[in-house]
Amino acid sequence: MKLSYPNGEAARLLAKQMWEPKGGGATGNVKPLPDGRWIMTQYPRALHHSVPVFDTIRRDTFVPVTVSEPTPPVGTTDAYVRFGYDSNFYCSANRNEACIASTGTVNPGNPYFYIGVDGPQQTTCGSGCSVAIAAISSRVLFYQWVFLNQGTQIGTGRVEMVAVP
Image (cartoon, rainbow, N blue to C red; front, side, top):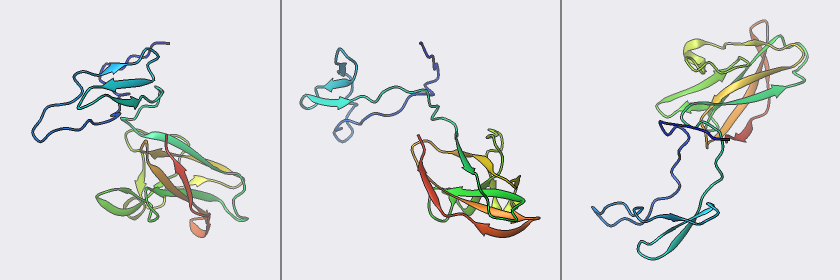
């Protein structure tokens, strides 16, 4: 299987070598071992770095993380998920506001909503539901279900955490 990413979308930084102040890069003489799992450098002495296994996760865009609630509380008609990268559910470094998701797929043009501006966007959730969260790769995602009955909050789930691949 050959994968082609002409713009380097699947690339990620493996390691930085020891650089001298105002010095150049130290990766000019990097040699992979025959099996491709390790690379060797010669700056300032021979060093070995393990190379992670290549995967097909696109790290230049949001990674969809699907969360499910098979048994919502009695009386639930709708629900949404608040999420973020800390216990306050902030998903943006420049905005102190909880983010929410409420659809089964991630829309790249509008991947999430802010609770204060957009209001609680909700999905039907009478007998179980699932929501896709637009997550950032290589981060820990905090999320919590919010359950509604005809637009009135009737309960929340516990705070969950998941490591985004």
